[in-house]
Image (cartoon, rainbow, N blue to C red):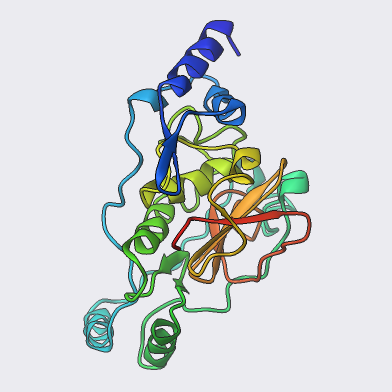
Length: 267
């Protein structure tokens, strides 16, 4: 990393105020270090950027909306499923194998047992999750409960926008908009989309952010080496699954051992 770019990242970060709870505070050393992380050929623009705003809210539909979606789906033929295989693996023994996880950052999770489509059988499942205040997975997209606070709906909807991007160390720190994200970059993106952060934080900084303990809607698990979030019951993490590493939703339970647990005040 060029010294000039590193200095620029540190200077840019020093101009950004970070929101934790209800008060804005000057960035600490960990937060300055977060802004200094940089992907090659991706210059730091974080000081001039606003946090991401979801283009739309992904919310569990009502029964009426679900029935309308079912009727519309009947009018369209189902598309053939697309299987993407890296060109270098085509014709090799590895072609049908799941993507490897990123070392200590990864574990293999089973495919989500939740919904792949909205139909007559899944409408009661949607209604039950809404009544319980829990998000649900529809394919790779998380749907927030309509009863959830706006920040929760925004966090989930913002996170959906980067689902499937690759895991890249330092991604999501020099800029909100990156070609890939690391664990803290992905968590920061969701929190930024909810208006809870004005600049990305490292996993170490997230371990000291917000209020201690689990939240009602959003819980952050963080230590010096990794971080992930549980938002309305779904785990937002960069560990590996059948799609490879990178930001993805997981229906499986969190793994809290060895992590500091924090939450946004009021959530």
